[in-house]
Image: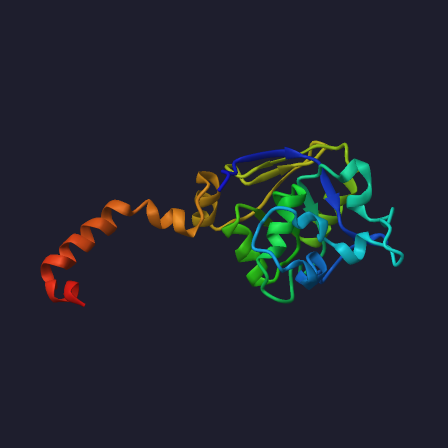
Length: 208
């Protein structure tokens, strides 16, 4: 998993009219017809498919990721309850395939929130007013934000710095580039020692 310490990049605001889009569920992020693969590549084709595709099958020019200025964005800013719905891990995979490494929203569905950390993506929780301010700073996609995970700060293009909270264990794993399996393997020596001792203390289990 790619380590995450400092991210500098542009941000894409996910809006419904003038407001940040709320209650974006995982079927909206990656519709069910795109779940036939276990590969993490190519999923950006289905990302927000129903939002970015018009009824006649052509690209919707008003959708944020169809605008050239936002196609290289690494940060997504959205409204409340982002990632609700079914527990599909394809949702963070599709966002990552698009290039998104960080989502900023006022709140998240628990499973999506947890899946982000498991896949090296940083979900940041901020008050809705702060999310709106950052979305306004996104401009035409050319404005650069700096997310400093070490110091837990976001620097917006206007020079304003805002702090965010994060579980310290999850922060350490993101910085080190470790998922849950990787974290477990950091204790390989202790696990091997336990297994060796177990074989000595309960040798009859080895016959099973």
